[in-house]
Amino acid sequence: MKNQRSPWTWVPSLYYAEGLPYAMVMLVSVVMYKRLDISNTEIALYTSWLYLPWVIKPLWSPLVEILRTKRFWIVAMQLLIGAGLAGVALTIPASNFFQLTLAFFWLIAFSSATHDIAADGFYMLGLPSHVQAWFVGIRNTFYRFAIITGQGLLVILVGWLETTTGDTKLAWSIIMGILSGLFILFCIYHRLVLPHPKTDEPRPGLKLGDAVRSFFHVFTAYFKKPNIALVITFILLYRFGEAQLVKIAPLFMLDKLDAGGLGLTTAEYGFVYGTLGIIMLTLGGIAGGFLAAKHGLKSWILWMALAMKLPDLVYVYMAYAQPESYLLVNLFVALEQFGYGFGFTAYLLFMMMISEGEHKTAHYAICTGFMALGMMIPGMFSGALQETIGYQSFFIWVMAATIPGLLLIRFLPIDPEFGKKQGV
Image (cartoon, rainbow, N blue to C red):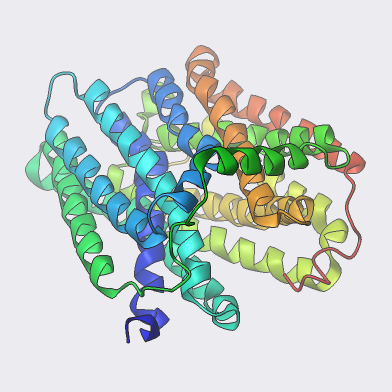
């Protein structure tokens, strides 16, 4: 029976396919443009704009509910992502590659954000509730594998191709072409193996006007929550420093020594951030989840925030010392990423707590939209700021930018039992 396929045949591949385009758009594009000699100002500004689809995706999520099935949206978006990656591969050699590849990255970003909506909804429809709970860890693991593949293994492979071919543009074109083929295969595979849940149907008789009114009811209910102005301010500012750091850190790693960077090769960067860094980020998240489940969010949120922000000091040190030891760079990044994963747990739990209530899923989606906005806006000006004041002063500024998020914690309304009673 189509409805009785093992979740192992589609949950891992679905969430691997969900994570990979996000990694390419938000993480790998930064490295690619740096290796293709685009300025830090332009890289930070234009790649930060690519966050926009994830900021506004709650606005078109009702359409995914009403038009066609979620299964249809998954397969269609994977095909579009494959087409977008092919477009990037074919336009990299062009003289105006920056504008052309950005246009295709926009296509991938909107397709990926829509795929997220459909995949998460399909997950809930395609599995019984008790199986959903068991497979949460599986889906998150394969999402992480996708990030490791994109930011780590593929970047390492690009570095090898750059060295082998002596042609940076060709190396990146090859990788994007391979990924395009992979997503065509994902499209075909999921067209064949995804189950057909009886509940995965367009909502019959529901008119667009009714859906829009329902959406605005849910949307306005979010802004009627207690202390919502403080809550939104905190969501926007919690990662104010880190939003700038995450955009500039790869550029700092790849920049030449005489430009103030560390002079890492593409492959060396891929290992530092895409493998070791992601592993430590994941371990930090696991540790944060364990402690929050044991003692509650309120007991740990300040310590988690400090663990996220204080390790940013390693970049201040590296900017001044420009260490030649690759091992030392790996250790510093591992420390910073572990702290980031640990502190990010508090952020997610806080948004879960705020979203509690009648419209939990929709309100959490709105929270994640503000979360993406909090990453997009600081990232946009970070490149221009860094090129104006240099890496050393920039990383000192990043440390100062972490302070507002810390100060707001004291005023947050946090249930002392949240986390513990949720079993998170």
